[in-house]
Amino acid sequence: MGKQRVLSGIQPTGDLHLGNYLGAIRNWVEIQQEFDSFLFMADLHAITVPQDPKLLADSTYKVAALYLACGIDLEHATIFVQSHVPAHSELAWLLMCITPLNWLEDMIQFKEKAVKQGENVGAGLLNYPVLQAADILLYEPDKVPVGEDQKQHLELTRDIAARLNYQFGSETQPILKLPEPMIRAAGARVMSLTDGTKKMSKSDPSDLSRISLLDPPEQIQHKIKRCKTDPVRGLQFDDAARPECHNLLSLYMIFSNQSKEAVAQECADMGWGQFKPLLTDTLITALKPIQEKYTQIRAEPGYLDAVLHDGKQKAEAIANFTLNKVKQALGFSIPT
Image 1 (cartoon, rainbow, N blue to C red):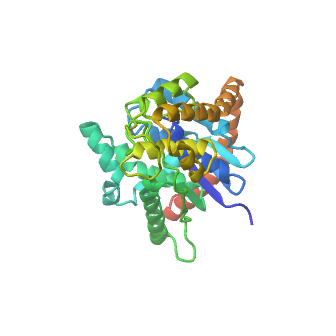
Image 2 (image 1 turned 90 degrees about the horizontal axis):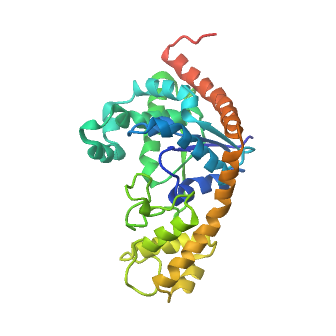
Image 3 (image 1 turned 60 degrees about the vertical axis):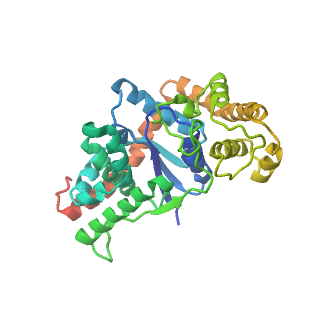
C-alpha cells in the first residue's frame, strides 16, 4: 500500500501571515512524511477579485518559496502552480456544466463577498467553487485539509463528484473519488490583532491586523505594540469577554512551544506592558529561520523555476489522467 494522497493550496494574494502558517502550512509540514502531498499556488482563484498583473507572478513565486522555507520537503511533496496545469480550467468547465446554479448561489462566501463587490462582482466569484472542486478531484486525494470556513466547499466538491458519478458512471465503477475532509486540530484559528472576534486575513485593509511571515523585527514590534488589548491586569485563556487576550496568549503558547497550563501560570499576573515584549521576542525568534531560508531560496538563480517545472510535470501526469476519464465518460473523443 502506498501513501494516501492529500491536496491543498493557498491563493498568492497579499503576504502570507501567521494564520496561513498555523492554519495550513505548519499542518502540511507535520503530515508530509505520512502522506503524498500535492500543494499548489491557487493563482486562478486569485483573480476572482481584482489583482495587479505586475505583482501576481512574483507573489506566486513568493508563496512557493515560503512553502519551502517553512519546511515543505520535496522528497515528500509536490509543489506546483495551478495555472501551469491547464486541466484545472478544463475540468472546471466540464463540472460547471453539470452543477446546478442554486448550489453555487447558496455558498456562504459568495454571498458575503458579492455584497462587498456590489455591481462589479464577476461571474468567477460565483463559479470558483467549481474550479476548487476541479482542483481537488483532478488529483483524487484521499484527504483534503480544511478548516471550518472551507467545509462547505468540500461538501460541494463531494456533491459534484457524486452527481457526475451518478449521471455518467455506475455504483461499481465511479468516475471520481470522493475525498474525505482532514479537519485541522482545534486551536489553529488565528484571530486579527485589531479585533479578536475576526479571523486574521490577507484581505483586511489594515496591515496592523496581521503578522506576515516576512515582517522584519521592527515591524513585528510595532504591530504587537499597537495591537488591541484591554485594561485588565492578569492574562488568561478562554474568557469570552477578552478575545484579544486569548488570541495573543495562544500565539505565545504555540511559538514558545509551551503547554497551555504553563503559559496560563506564567502570565496570570502579567500586565500588557510586560507581556507584549515577551510575545514580540518570541515571534521574532520563531520567524527568523523561515525568513533566512526564504532569502536563501530567492537568491538562488533558477531554483524555483526548476522546482515548479518538476512540480508541473508530476501534477500534469495525474491531472490529465483524471481529466481524460471524465471526458470519456461525458462522450468526448480523446486524441491519441
